[in-house]
Length: 316
Image (cartoon, rainbow, N blue to C red; front, side):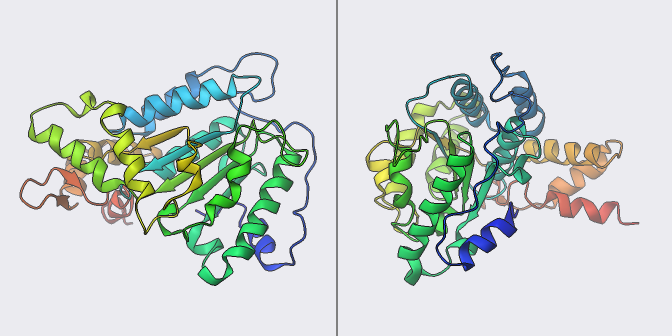
């Protein structure tokens, strides 16, 4: 998922000049209508989350309330910062895509949405000081051009520790930093770190005969933030962003069950223009692997590979 790749490629291989600043005109947004005088409506975002994201009641509620409340606030005190955590295939990248599409036409391809992939853009530990300088310049230049810029950091669990602290001043409660306001920007972090803790809670509920929908944010959030903060293999290890409480929400993505995979498969069929074939839906879902080994409750790859497996049944 390479967004604005040419821009990032240019940025990280040229001299440390400030990024090209784009037209300062208010960007065209949809359907929350950023910049309109009317108050934005939450229905399009909620519809997308309801129709495209499965098994994630916590994430749906948090994302809807956080994004809608933030966009609807004319004078936020700080940027919106969301940290999405869970196993591969549970919907983290998909949610960041939905958020971008509901704020800007073009979604992830918008000039105002910027994706950083840790292993692509920050590969060498020996260059951390350089990366910090470049990252600050890139964010400063783009927020100067568009206050409502969106920055997505993928693979936070693979980012070198200490690097992300470079953006700490931009996330804090400052009206201006060197003459620039970051209070309307959105920062989204995606990570597998903490997934074990999320799974432990979900499995405890399942073994106790409780519904996963009964899991509350309070059951996970604190333990999740502590787990991420103390994970030496995470870009958030002992990060000032967590220590200074600058992450607004730690959003847990629960591991997916068999029934959720079938939902993903049906939606993919419909998106390809096929009629729903329940026999194929079941066959594809049954090809997936599940854990724990004895109980086989959760898909170990979520919905990530169901789409390619579906190709087998529709190979012309």
